[in-house]
Each structure stands twice: as structure tokens, then as C-alpha cells.
Image (tube, rainbow, N blue to C red):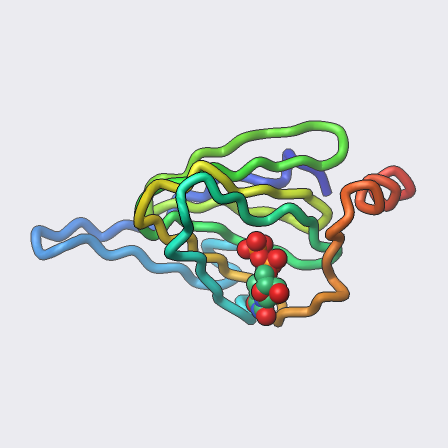
Amino acid sequence: MNIEHCKIIELPKINDPRGNLTFIEANRHIPFDIKRVYYLYDVPGGAKRGGHAHKELHQFIIAMSGSFDVLLDDGKDKKRVHLNRSYYGLYVCPMIWRELDNFSSGSVCMVLASHEYDEADYFRDYAKFMRARWKA
Ligand code: TYD
């Protein structure tokens, strides 16, 4: 899987004068079962998150509030994606190095994940990630 498999997915949006509503159904709007949800918040200005890849994990990243950038890198190509709406998100397939930066103040980044947390699923070393990438 490479960077072309990572894409912005637009979610259903029920417009309502009382406030809009968006929903996500696993395997319908996003291509995996959701086993875990986590979120980043209170991110100080200038901070960077991520800086790793996952061996098997699929993720869907949404800017629930505010905005930030996701830098994707499959070892060959790189792509910077700006997220700033809660009715779309970025699907990230396995074996993609990602970094998150440019967080606006008060932003909240929610991540839906296909598996429970498992440190063994991480590549935290870019050189090791690249070796595994070129072997595949
Ligand atoms: P990490 O995945 O490196 O954060 P990010 O990619 O957002 O920069 O995780 C940071 C720390 O939090 C690390 O010690 C592992 C822990 N953690 C969990 O315990 N459970 C989780 O679901 C996640 C995502 C992280």
C-alpha cells in the first residue's frame, strides 16, 4: 500500500439550523472496523506529533475542531494534507510514515483506529521503516 491509498473521505453531513451532524459507520464510510478512538488536544503551538509508521494499523484522522497538517510519506512519495473540517477526514493505510504539525490553537485531532494500541505495530525509526519498505 502506498500514498495513493491514503485519501480524504467526505462524510455524511446533516445540515440543520440547530447545528450540523456528521456520522461515521465502520466499513461503510471508512474501510475498516473501529477498535479504538483516541484524540490529541491542548497541543502547544509549534508542536509536532506522529513521527512513526504502523505495520498493520489503518487510521482515519479528523480535525474535530481547528486545523492541522498531516505529512504522509510512503518512502517514495510525500504528500502534505491540511485538515480543517469535521465532516471529512484522512484515511491512512498501513506502512505510511506520518507527521502532524501546524496545529491551530484549540484544535482537536480525533483518530479512529483499526486495532487496539500495540507498540509492536510501530516503526518509530525512519531508517528501519525505509528498510522494511524497500524489502516489501
Ligand atoms: P504516539 O502514538 O507516539 O502519539 P502520536 O502519534 O499522536 O504523536 O503515542 C504517544 C504515547 O501514548 C505513547 O507512549 C503510547 C501512548 N498511547 C497509548 O497508550 N494508547 C494509544 O492508543 C495511543 C495512540 C498512544
